[in-house]
Image (cartoon, rainbow, N blue to C red; front, top):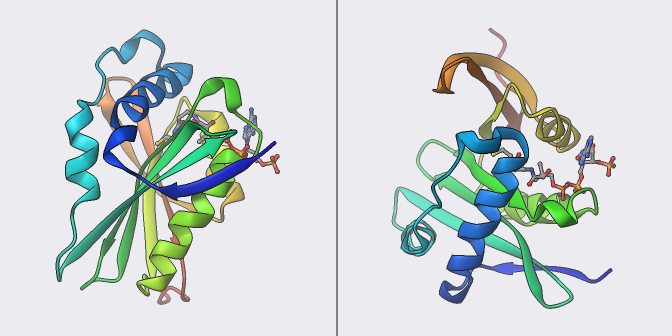
Length: 165
Ligand SMILES: CC(C)(COP(=O)(O)OP(=O)(O)OC[C@H]1O[C@@H](n2cnc3c(N)ncnc32)[C@H](O)[C@@H]1OP(=O)(O)O)[C@@H](O)C(=O)NCCC(=O)NCCS
């Protein structure tokens, strides 16, 4: 299989909206109905100033876009965010999510992030295992967060030792 990762281009926007919807349906089912408007991807990817920088990477398999990762860097705080990742459900468990994470991780470490955080749904065991595999550890829980009855588990990965609490 031929997987490559590159930066988002505006021509990818509609495909990313579809992949986001299809991949999130794998754990949210009919709770998710609306697609991210395609112009959102361009807006998010364009953020670059002295305080913050964003990047969206897309994965291609044999020339077709099959996944994406959206990453942010708070340059003053040294705090990164993995905003969202999605892989076409027909292409799960083939290493695409890991290849995307590698690109995002280079984006964060090049910008000297000391910590990166994200959150994962309590009803999404596949992504929970994925994030643990990428080196995240749980930091807490938001109860009934995006949906009533579904918690979000907060996850973080440190690029330097956290201070003792
Ligand atoms: C989470 C997600 C991005 C992982 O992408 P992927 O391309 O399937 O991931 P990879 O193939 O690189 O797998 C990496 C690791 O994740 C875990 N994993 C992936 N698929 C798994 C599955 N079906 N069951 C259990 N663990 C799984 C494994 O630890 C795997 O490592 P291994 O191959 O060494 O066993 C993908 O499942 C997805 O798009 N899910 C829906 C959207 C979502 O949940 N996004 C995260 C919330 S923001």
